[in-house]
Length: 317
Ligand code: GLU
Image (tube, rainbow, N blue to C red; front, side, top):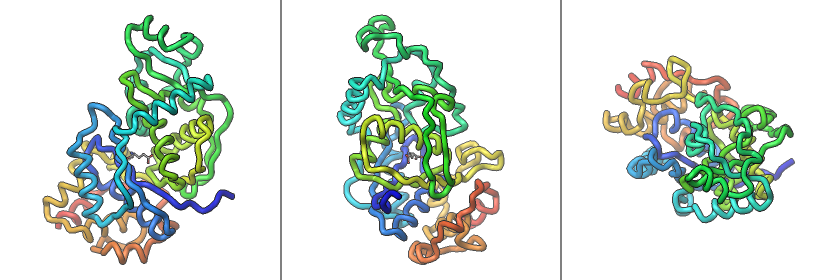
């Protein structure tokens, strides 16, 4: 048995505005943390170069605070932690666990952000696995800096997700050797998360279940890097649109800012998020303090929640 977790983090990606779906996951994370007495840290996952908007980062902070969520200490910005990521990369290279890759595949660019199942991650065929003796050779042959991939094996990775249940993944079949550093010199999402969580002592991760496979990738990296503490995971279902896909722009304007501008108050937004979380029988306003008293993770639906016009009407009423 691993010891009870003590520290979690809110980790928004400022590639878009905070919407009802992300807000619901952060709220569940925060409520569980408060109920369990964990420390809550805040990390801005602003590594996705061109897609990151500084205004979106500031806005995510403001809006999570507007909902009443709190955290301890300074906010950590991944964009300022490159030196630590480079050190981890060096360690993996020295151990023979990472190799340069000059493939120009979409997967290399996509490594910037937390992957979603719908990204259709393909299995890397291992083209560059034993291709270059050193990074210099890769650079000389392709005329540009290489990306870096970490080797995976066929060994099964298992973990007991506290919400989604036990999981086992064979990374060689799911994604193959995956990108940990992009050719632009920026760490990929998987590496950054592992380095940052370990540096901050994070041992409880609560996030959307589109990241379930990422947990296996992160466990693999943590073990190669010899980093602790062990992490306990809670992956919770996402809010989706009527088409079953993760809530996004295509489903209309579900940004928190949109509802704030329309006059919605925190208790109203919290009321909808609580209703979606099985904590209220019907949509109605609720204070964060009352919500905390009612919070019971076992009532959270195991299925995806479909955002409906009735939800939108409730917030705009
Ligand atoms: N930044 C990710 C998101 O907003 C979360 C990543 C994580 O929790 O590991 O979905």
